[in-house]
Length: 236
Image 1 (cartoon, rainbow, N blue to C red):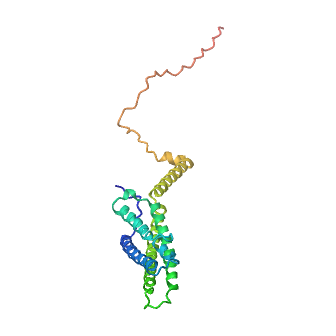
Image 2 (cartoon, rainbow, N blue to C red):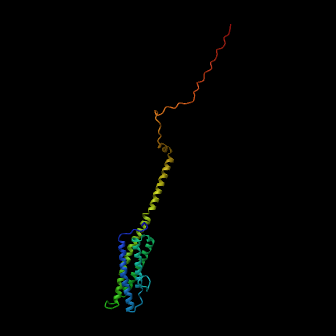
Image 3 (cartoon, rainbow, N blue to C red):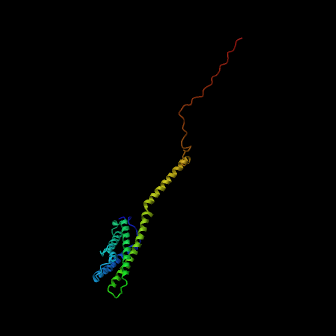
């Protein structure tokens, strides 16, 4: 099965993918615990939008952000290792870019929201929920950094493979070079015709190899000159 359409990434990228899967599960637990604790234990229902955005970029719909990460990372790992026929470089670029934007927005909003409630003492019950939110924001920052690394490497490899070392472009360049060489040779031949003729070797037969051909035509004798008769003698 051909894998020429797959962008070749460094060997550490699959390790980053697996780490992202593990961290997404941990963040899912931290964000879910914070939302359930504040909503059920304290009756707080306002201001939880950043936590909902941490689990997906939609308010009050928890457990979808990490599901998104689980889906895209599973797709990338499976298509690169198990089913390369399902791989598409532009889908890869799209999901990488979307995940990068999601995690940047999620950890920034959650960190800002958690810092607002940092004035509570650690002896209060509600403080533990803000601490888990801050931990989720910190791990979200790590996720964003890892997506930054993978996105940068992917863009560089995509550019090099598609535009930097394109075999079709190289073949086209060779064809153009060969055509240019042929045209130059033809021009030289046209400008120096005698030189082109001199390059051809002419082999002449040896003098002993065959007798000299004899002409079959009869040679007519040279024309005879008319003799003038002497004048007649006079009788006396």
